[in-house]
Each structure stands twice: as structure tokens, then as C-alpha cells.
Length: 436
Image (tube, rainbow, N blue to C red; front, side, top):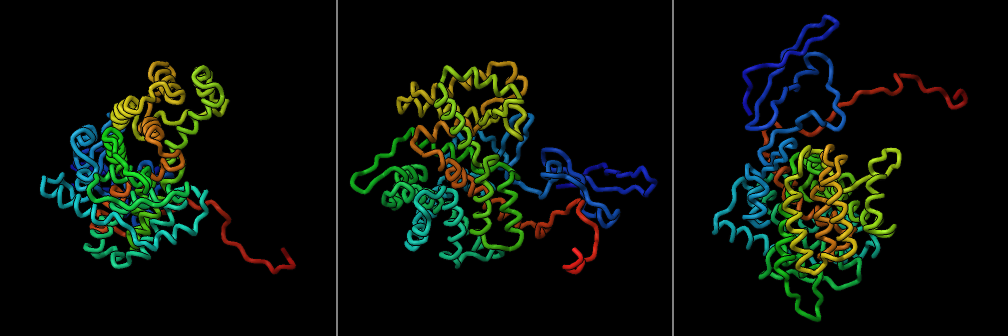
């Protein structure tokens, strides 16, 4: 970042002296006012619940322009990456700053592939969970538990440790997610196969069984790969900020990523596509396609309490750029599997049609978002609804690691310590028990 030509002046109506604050410019995006010395100069903090107007760090990884509907990984538009690259190329880009050439791609892919197995003891750790546990509860435990199995790479201040932890996490997340799924349905775990792609290997570990060979469907393989690319990073969202805050204490990478998994579990964050599918299934149970119009009228009525999940986005004030890509993939998958006439998917298409044509939704820019389409794709592939957030965590792991490594390499990084506006009781004395 560089100093802007202008400075910000903060003045006070009570006659107190004004304060000059530096203004910094990034390469793109809004300028920022540097308030680091504000407390020392004025004795005051700023107040910004949810940090909606606060830049907590400087980053060169992902840029979002919500008004334009733009998402860039290291400067590359998401639309180009999703069409021209695979997930492991995208991982290389996020981790190292550049897309790999052919040799670098092979080396990186081979390295990840050779680390996909997990310690056999992880099976016994997994058995401590109830069979009906939510996969995200299991995944939070398994990822955190990696630090106990791979304690040779837990020094967050050692670049070599961070490198091997990054590779291990990216490689082992598909294995852990599939193990959590297999455990829940009582099927044997499937070991990874090195000749398969990242997405193909995951499909086999999820849906293959020992008595027969599993043949990877290339359409589903590409669809899953695209889901991974579209969810790989998304700037300073709640789970990424959690990983950064957790990592700022110097904790090990596995613990920091486990914190991100736990944060992602929330229905307002990673659980959005799960909530979207649950909404579709509720409409299906209550009359299906014939009730879509009635449901959308309830959505318009704020007093009804009915929420439309999978439409609109907190950041994108225009169309979510990931949604168009996921819409294409959604249609490809439904066609490939012959599910165009499946009642639930017909219902989803009707919901999409109304949202794109009805003035109420168009004016409010409540377009279908990536969660809407990715939920439909995952259900079509056969992934259970309660595992959707686990898939999201798998994809987002590389973004979390890239952000964590960037933070640790930043000479300005400090342990996170937000401030507060205190409005509780002022100082008072404790009375003896008999007088209370």
C-alpha cells in the first residue's frame, strides 16, 4: 500500500484539537484511513460492529467489488479461472501468487497426491463420535486432531512447517470429509488412489465401495472441481477472519483451520446452501411447484417471517459472478444424470424463474447466488445435505491457509485484540452475603 496524496482530518464539535490521519491507497478498491494512533492521540476508539467499514489487514490474495459483481484471485477473474484452470492450479495460485507452468503444475499435483492418506489412528479417533453426529461436528474435531498426528509441522513461525502443513491440509481434507460421510452411513472407508484427479479421487472415496471398481464420471468430476474453485477464497469473510485471528496468537495451522471450519458451520455463512436445500424440500413437502408462487408471496410479506434462502448476497450488490458459472454446471449435471424432470429440481427452476423476472426481486437484486446452484448440484451428485458445508470447508481450506501464511509474513501483524464500547455497570463494591 502507499500513502495517498490527501490526509483525513478528524475534527470535534466540542472544540477539541483536530487530528490528521494518514490515508493509504491499495492497487484497487477503496482507500483506507489509518486509525492505528487514534487512541494514543485522542483517547477514543472507533465503533464498527461486524467490522463492516474496517480493513483488518492488507492482503494481495482476493479482491471483491460487490457493486460490479467482480471476484479476482490474485488479479485473475473467477470466470477465467473456472473455465481455464483446475482446482489444484487455483490452489497454487492462491498459495504462491502465480499460476503454475506445466512443470510446476505436475510437481504441485504430485506433492498433494502423495499426502492424501491420513494416519491410520484417525479411524479410531473417528469412532469416538456418534454415528448420527453432524459431519461438521466430526470435521471440526478431525481437523483439530491433525495437530496431534502431524506435530512435526505445527510451528506457525517456521516457513517449512507452514509449507508442509498447507500441503497436508489441502491433500487430507477430501479424505477426512469422505471418512466422516462413510462413518455416518456405516460403509468402509475408501483409501485414496494416486492416479485419480483431486475431484475424481474425492468422488471415489465418497461413493466407491470395496466390492467393485468405481468409474469416475467426467461431468461430475468437472462439476465438483468447479465448486472447489468457486469456493476457494472470498476475501476477509467471517471464517477467514477467524482463521487469521486464531493464527495471530501463534497457534498451529491445524488449530487455526479447525477454527475456520467451526465458524463456517454457521447457517449465515457456510451453511447457506444447506439452508437453501432445506427450504426447497420444505416447499416440496407442502405442495411442490404448485405452491412456489404462494411461497414467494409470503417472502414479499415481511410480517410472514418466511425467508428466501440462496438469493441475494451480503457482498455482491449485483449478480454473484460465481452464480452464472455454477448455473452452467448445474444444467450440465442435471442433463448428464437425466434429472431435468426431478420434482425438486423443477421446483428450484421455477423459483429461479420468478426471482429473475418478478419486479420485487429484480429491484432488490435478489438474484440466485452460488449457494442456490451449488446446493442443487451437490444433491444431484448424491452428496447429503448435511455434508454441503463440509464440501465448502474442503474447498475453502486453501484460501484459509493462504490468508494465514500471508498474515504471518506481514511485518505489521500483531495478535488480534478488538476493542469495545462498554455500557455495563460502573465500579461498585461487593457487599457481604448477609447484606445482598
